[in-house]
Image 1 (cartoon, rainbow, N blue to C red):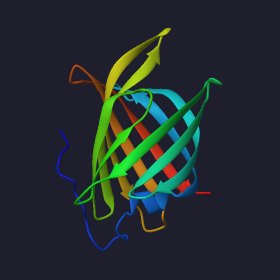
Image 2 (cartoon, rainbow, N blue to C red):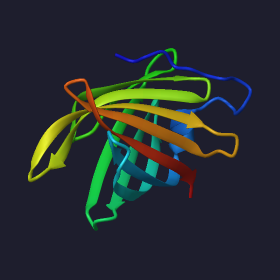
Image 3 (tube, rainbow, N blue to C red):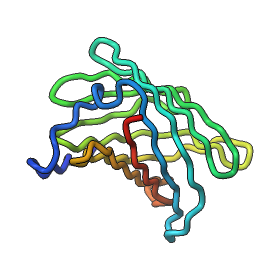
Image 4 (cartoon, rainbow, N blue to C red):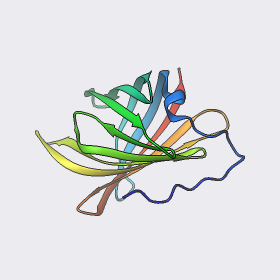
Length: 157
């Protein structure tokens, strides 16, 4: 279930999620475990295509251990800033909401761990900054226990 979207208006323009991700975007990020230890860092190249009332995002991840991963999101905007999303490695669908310059999204991602895939819950929060950077953080949990956090900074290419 999505938590309330917190927004401090006036600091940056409202976030148009589909418009912001249209075209090419690059990002850098990291994953830290629940003790704050850096476990993995990555670079992401994102290509977004607006599709009517939705968006297709092609994400190409390059991790610091030379692992490559590709995820293709299909996001459908609904009413009142709400949206849903699907991807091949997402169990079911993601639910999200944009309010002002803040977006939240929750989903279960099938994460590769030791040769198998484990369901992990991701609760994302994205905030549009005045310089047009989109900062994102995600709480990652399993059985409601936090296992780590992801931090990402998106910039238009």
